[in-house]
Structures are given as C-alpha cells and as structure tokens.
Amino acid sequence: MEGTAPFFRMEGVSKRYGGVRALEKADLSVRAGAIHAVLGENGAGKSTLIKIMAGVVAPDEGHMTLDGRQVEFASPAAANAAGIVCVFQELSLIPELTVADNIIISNPPTRFGMIDRGAQRRMAEEALTRAGASDIHPLALVKDLPLSRRQMVEIAKALARKPRILILDEATSALTSADVANVFAVLKRLRAEGLALLYISHRMNEIAELADDCTVFRNGRKVASYPAGSKSDSEVIEMMIGREYHNAYPTKPDRDTNVAKVLEARNLSWSDRLRDISFSIGAGEIVGLGGLDGQGQRDLLLALFGVLRGLGGEVLVDGKPVSINSPAQARKRGIGMALIPEDRKTEGLMLPMTVRDNLSFASLDRLTRGGVVDRAAEQDHIDEMVKLLEIRTDGLDIPVGSLSGGNQQKVVIAKWLMRHPRIVLLNDPTRGIDVGTKQEIYQLLRRLADGGAAILFYSTDYAELIGCCDRVLVLYDGAIKRELAGDEITEHALIASALNIHPAEAARQEAAR
Image (cartoon, rainbow, N blue to C red; front, side):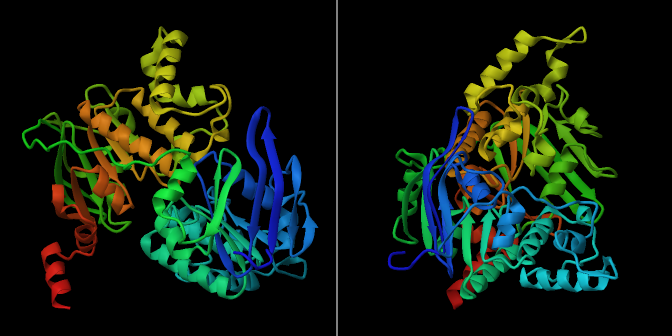
C-alpha cells in the first residue's frame, strides 16, 4: 500500500443522521489496479461510506479526491459521470422490464428519436459477457429470474457504465458457487485492466482470495488499513467487533436418537423440483440442508410452509398427518411453524413501516382482544425480543429500513419468535450480515433447540452447516442423496455429497492420486 499514490482518497469525512453518528472523520485510500476490501460489522459505517462515494448522500464534512482532483457528487448520476459505479446489496432492477432494458436504462441508444432495440440488445449482451453471465437472455424479464441471476444482471448493469472505480457491496451474497467463481474471474480481469475496485463482504474466504489492501471500520471510524494477508482472521475479526473473538459456534450437545419426532416428511414430491423426500427432525435438533445451490433446498422449505401447490407426499407433526395448504395454516398453534425467508428486504420486512409494526405484524392474532390490539401485551413481547436478540435501534417508531442489515435480519427472526414456534425453517439466514451478528444467531439457534424446537437450516456456507448442525441432509437434483451426522459432517464430505459422490469413494479417489 505504501509508495503508490491513491487513485481515490477520502479524508476526514463525517456523516450524522440526527443524533446518530454514521461516519466520524473517516479516511480511505484506494489504488488503481487493486482490490480494496472494506471490513466491519453491520452498522460500522461501510454503507454510509460507499453512499457518499456514489453520490447517494452528501457528507457533513471532509473531502474526496479522484485522480488528484477534489470532487463532490450531488447525485449518483454525477458520481457515475466521474466513473464511480456501485453495485449495492439491495438490487436496483425494475422487475417488469427486460434484462436489456435494465442494463442500458440510464443511457439507451437511440435512432430517429426512438430507442434502438437492436443496439440496446447488443450492448446488453456485451455487458453480460463481460460480467461472466452470457447465459442470461437479454430479452428475459427480470421478474422471471431467480435472485442469483438478478444479481448477475446488476453487475452487468454496472459494467455497462464503464466504471473507473467499481464498488461491490455484498455482491456475491445471493450468488451460486458457480456465479461466485465467474465474478471472481471478472474482478481479477478488471484489476489487471487497471480499475480500482472497492469490495465489501463478510465472507473472509472471499477477502483472502481477492483483496490486495484492506481497511477495517468500527462504529463509524477507521480502525486500521493493512496489506491483505498480513493479519490473521482472528485479528481482523477482533478489530471489527472491538473485543476478543471466541469460537463462533456453540457446543453441540450429545445427540439423543430417541427424541420425539416433531416434524416428519414422507415421500414429498413437487413438479420436477422435489423427488421423493423423506426425513424427520426431533425436538432439540438442528438439521441442515446442504448441496449445491438450486438443488431443491428452498423449494423444500416453501413446501413445508404451505406455499407450494400440488405437493405430493405427506407431512406429519408430532406423529400425526397434517394438511398445510398455506402459511396461515403452518403457523397455527397446533403446528407452530415459522419460516425465516431468504430475502429480508422483499420477503421478510415492510421497509417503510416502523420497527414496532414489523415486530408485531406476525403475532397480531395473538395480541388482539375483541378486535383491538392489546398495546401493553404488544410492548411486553417487543421489549422481550429486542432484549433477547440485542436489536440495535434508535427507537421502535423509526422505519425498519433505516436499520443496518444485521439488525433488520434480527427483526425478521424476532417477529417469528414472538409466536414461540416449535418448528423453525431458515433459508440462508446469515446472508450478507457481519460476523458478530452471525455469532449471535448461531447461539440463538442452539438456545431454541435446547428449548425443544425442531430446526431445519439451509445455508450456502459449509462452515455454518459443520458448526451448527447435528445432522445434514445433502440434496442433489431435488432428492436427498446423503445424510451426514456428527463427525461425518466435514467440508470434504459435504462437497463430495453435493456432487453426488459418496464420501468414501471421494476419499479413495483422493488417496489414489
């Protein structure tokens, strides 16, 4: 980092929202031809920093220089014109438009005063190819794409603007492993072309593979900048959270195979996405769903929660067959099921509404007496959840969208815990949140299990499955191909099973090399 003049520099930048300090005298230097990782917990100031760089918000004080010239941006368009383009964690795509319309939306090519559709399509194809996503059809509607493909369109949209500085905010959090590999190749190529890249991620393995330089923020202030690889993961995490870092995963209790079955599935099938799935979860168990992304894990969670129609097979709760045809039925007292969705912003929260309303929304039927909400009972339940999950908020009556990503995720979890569920389904619940909050969620899951809950936990992070789960069901092509338990749950076994290779066979192949 030393001896190379920064292409972009931020010095003494501060930003406050009322009495809340988002950034305080923040400094940052970014080199051309380098990937600079910005690390910190949710609420550390990272999002405010990149919004200032991208012209979304104006700083209260401080200044920025770009290529040796002082700059300030009154709007995102001004930042884009200067060559600073951001891929935010929250997608900016318009679902009803095509991929091509979204990619070239800011400056479409025209002919005779009308949009030149042929030129627009060619530009979109070029951007998709540059983003490593040439398999996405430019005329497909964005609303018809899964979340991981939408994220690739967002990256292509940014590259179409010919950035000089590309900012990526948790850009891989919704991607499949294959897409992550493509994005990494793209970023390394852009670095070689001389672009400056600012990379924000909570995945330490990504930082280790990509970053040249790193800066850690905590509580709105820069803690340290250092060359990538010069600090251990534990040292970095301790800088991020401001305290000594302990093992992230709680101790697993000895497994009791005789516990009562709370949830059981028999021969579940749906379309060609789920194939003859059978399993059970006992009281106090955390059972993981593994396998490559898109092998039916999310469909299985939706099927259990009553979202899918035309489901074959049988679901039993406490040994008795139940008919779950809607989420409303799934959450009834006799079943007591809760689903923590994949995308908190579109599926889990009503962002303009208050923290209070979001917390109590799922439990209104239990808080209402004679058609009127019992405000005292509501407040007691909310206070209990805020304390239990350590939700950091400046009040219950502010929009939930103003909270950091980690605290938003805590609100999603808390609103379902207010119903005291016996069966908890989790769809990649730690995506895009910081290591400190992840640790709190792992501890919470174990406490829920210790209290008798049956938990089905899908994660795209193998370390989470290894650290949290008593058993892991590995899905391949919509079917359970392997069940791993106890010491069998290793990264090698999970990867081999995800590829539909028996772990013993994989070990023999490895030994033969």
